[in-house]
Image 1 (cartoon, protein in one colour):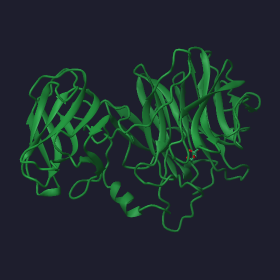
Image 2 (cartoon, rainbow, N blue to C red; image 1 turned 180 degrees about the horizontal axis):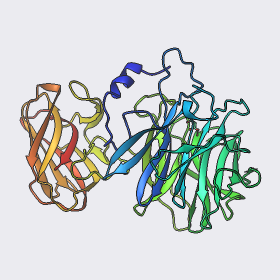
Image 3 (tube, rainbow, N blue to C red; image 1 turned 45 degrees about the horizontal axis):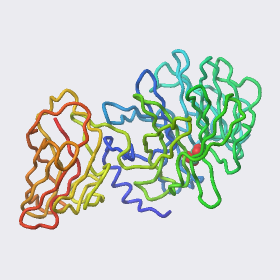
Image 4 (cartoon, rainbow, N blue to C red; image 1 turned 180 degrees about the vertical axis):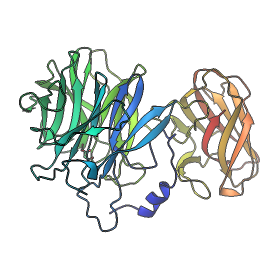
Length: 444
Ligand code: FUB
């Protein structure tokens, strides 16, 4: 396996749930299905792990499901394991094949759909369902898989008339089945969706926009590899018409994803392997997505900055920037829990970080996590641009070396309210060509 397991294990000693992209760094998460229930954003991903000593994993090693909710502006809460492979009533034990799930709400019930390897050997994967009165579970798992569904990657659509459709991938074909009102069995047979181009692989995700049905999916081109493509149609059962790519190939190996509207903005959730360097140990990410006037979708470019809007008391991971000038980012070292930092800062280096939520302006101080191997300099936090309003000024001193980290604080110089873009500007004194390493900022 082309990974440094020791690095990965060290990384998991800490839980950095304030990260921007990737969204969660204390464990590997893939295939993120995002859902908004009663105004709150939830994520139902799958879970990649490093196979235990002696375990021969089938391609991916995926033993269970966690789920997450977005708390405050950028903190993802891990609700722990909601289904373990050995609790699947009809599943083959220890088969490590808990691939991409989905969850939807109908009435006051949440329905969680997941693929797993069946004990009876009737198929590569079957799709099961569980119900709960809460989006975070616990779910009551149905004793049997849903008859007539033979494949992976369930993606659910609840139409305006309350009819539900389950899309899935079987033999590199995109299929759909209408669900009965009980949501636990299919109404008629699953059919192949017409109009999906050759190269379709997996991961169908359905949603509706301006009365049209949209289907997004993993689409492979021989000269490019995996992309995220989409098609639109006037009927949930098809036919659909291919419209193009939402994301070019980003070398991610697979690109299971989902699309959701949250707080008035459309977001694409997808995965990559920022932390592990290995495409079977993935990490979920999110970036904003936009529609053009004609209903087509603008291509999404993956960013480090992602979507979170950190607020009072949350960490602002400045290394997940919108823009960086004359500085770099790297993994931290020394006495610091594993994470990323802004480093190699020089005179007038800067990092811009958009969408920080200062709320009602009650913050009185700013905190920074820094290391420095030189004795004098400072860095300023300003609003908007390098000449914008100065809101905090941090003196830099020797912390014991570039690998020796300290938390420092300084009073806020101005009252700041609402959503703001901030810029950190580094200033050298006595000509030092490296000023300070900065891990995160926080205001309180
Ligand atoms: O995560 C396992 C499988 O890889 C998913 O079910 C596919 O969509 C692909 O992401």
